[in-house]
Length: 296
Image 1 (cartoon, rainbow, N blue to C red):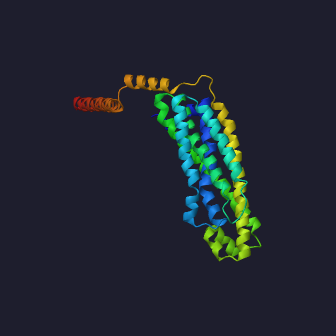
Image 2 (cartoon, rainbow, N blue to C red):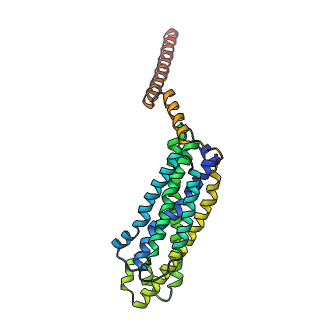
Image 3 (cartoon, rainbow, N blue to C red):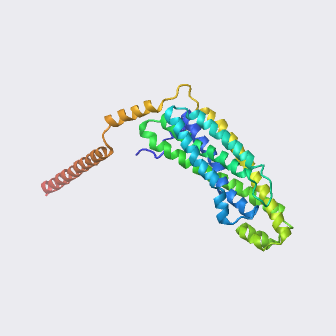
């Protein structure tokens, strides 16, 4: 039985670097998607619906980045340069988001920062997919594509855990003495409890959350820098073009039987083996019985 994920792919220089890059790229994506709406609600006093609307630039430009990256790579295999560019955009976007002022009014520049970061997210996904596809055989194509997606999600979950720990530590250390123990516990359970705080407590809570969000952005910016460094190991001086890869795939599919045919042949082989084994057991039983009769 073949392994779900062949470890030889991770030992491949370009594929291994692409997997590591996807892992570190997941850090800023999940953290921004989760905590940016919370910043709008807590620091800027927006409703949950308005907070969701205000992160549309991030989501829309992620789709735009995927489209732009796909259009560029589809003409010529420049996935390496698209990947490096996407990491630079992520560094720039997270760095700018970490410098946001902590005011009740939503700073207008936050939408531009989201657009920059969204472009980086979208372009990174396309470039990583193309990079891994052109480096593996046709048989490993599906495995490599799935691995990129899963590793990216794994990185996002770990990044979210790290930034959540930083947020909780900041709240407990900086709001201790300002909020009572019950208020602090209710705040950690639900940010909606801030509506029951006094004016002074609300202002202090917003300030702490704003500083913690900026710190979170600095942390994931460090991972974006790491992702940029890792992406340099995906460079190839003479990369395979998409057209050559498509021809190789056509030749592979033309010479290999269909999956259903191969599966049917495998089942028939197993059935023949089972029939032969059954006949052997039956003959052996008959011989044993015959020997017993002779002895009688």
